[in-house]
Length: 162
Image 1: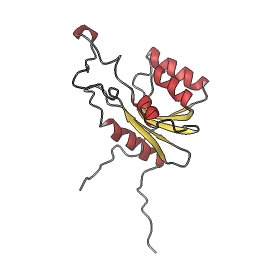
Image 2 (image 1 turned 180 degrees about the vertical axis):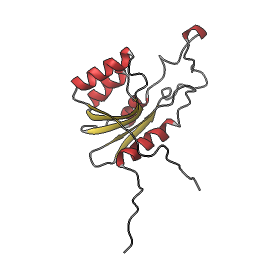
Image 3 (image 1 turned 90 degrees about the vertical axis):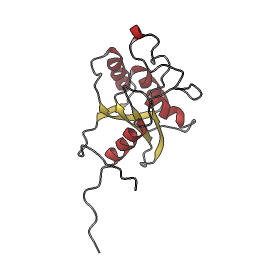
Image 4 (image 1 turned 135 degrees about the vertical axis):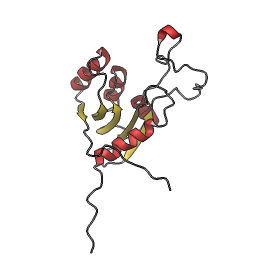
């Protein structure tokens, strides 16, 4: 009998890796966010990334962030967390965990609470001091949703596609 590998990644790192990989689908030139929702048995229920709704061409809608330059992306983009929730197509998310590469905004926090997600594991909290993120943290706490920042033991995960 041989010894098993000891350098495998944790469940948290695996699901965050899936979220980060999902973010690679985003066509947003400035911020790519990914999300992965899993059930209590560590089965993936859904993934999502930030982008425009189905049928709204990313060649027609703006990716601009600066209002001074004209129309911005903000009224049109669906965030990764909401996309992941909507991609479940009505499956129960009770007692699920949501892994996301960026701490959720207040609008996503509302959907997370309403969907029944009980824990959010996030990678970055770079907007921690913004009113949106502060409101999100307040709502998630009031809604009984645990939030945990993941501190990975691996700085990178490399995928070899051959």
